[in-house]
Length: 163
Image (cartoon, rainbow, N blue to C red; front, side, top):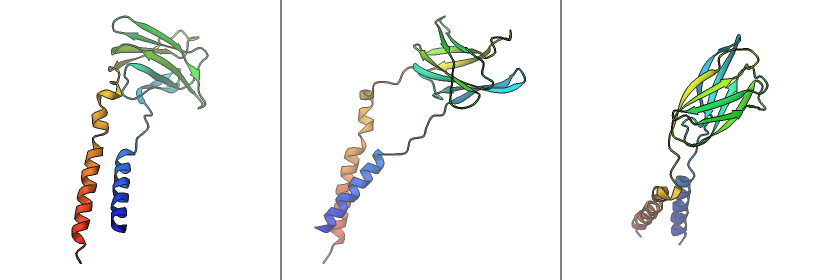
């Protein structure tokens, strides 16, 4: 009787282990580095693989008041957002809601008081992720495999108990 309890416990632990795999955080991708008015700067976009929806554009460098981010789609759709200061020194962020997949030109004017050209980067945005129900079969495919594995382990353990 005790042996079946151990086998059941092992199956539960193995199935939970398969379900709770580690996930890595998405810190974004550096899409531009350079120098702006004698100071180093960078632009980060998060998520690293942008899809239709909200993206975060971060300016790392010497921030100025009322910095703006302008995103222009290849079709001409234009979205503007104001950068807000973050807790980190010399870092500002803007949230953009990109509604269309395709090529976007992201422009940041970090030094509006100085008559300089904005920093511009190209960004390719993929379609939005499909609804979870379209890939639910793949998410739960481990359930029958865990049951088969548990059954096989129980049969094997039962076969080892001779005498």
